[in-house]
Amino acid sequence: MSRIAIPAREALPSASQPLLDAVEKQLGGVPNLFRLVALSPAALQGFLGLNGALGKALDVRTRERIALAVAEINGCDYCLSAHSYLSLNLAKIDAAEIALNRKGASSDAKANAAVAFAAKITRSRGKIADADIQAVREAGFTDAQIVEIVAVVAENVFTNFVNIVAETEIDFPVVHASE
Image 1 (cartoon, rainbow, N blue to C red):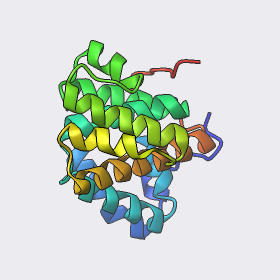
Image 2: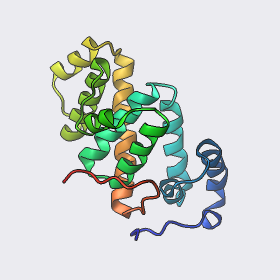
Image 3: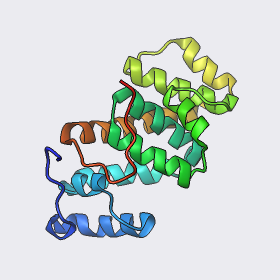
């Protein structure tokens, strides 16, 4: 059971409702994370704004790979479950690749650089070496894309922390982070 109750959609603030309508239209439903964050219309607006903007940045497969690595590192079962589902069904990433992504790696050389960089950022709380930036550049990422990788990490850390704090009830096929 969640430490912060997941409210029924109709019990959420009126300012959150149009934002949740957009989530429902896009996803076909409103997952527990969104209803939880919708307790604060400001938090929901900020999260959806960042999510929407980043949806136009890196490709979906790279974003999902990063989300898997960050969720695994942070031990967020909710996000790991959600992004495993989205990786398989939306990004069309196979199970073997998902397993690598959870370890901060990829079978694709360019994706490997992004995921490894994201994992290093997460583990070190952003304190990385010049060589880490150089490795991502050498893999073909621009400085703008490096900033986008950092932003995807930050977005996922936010959702990881919200779900860890709340112990959000998982409404996807359950996947547990490695101990």
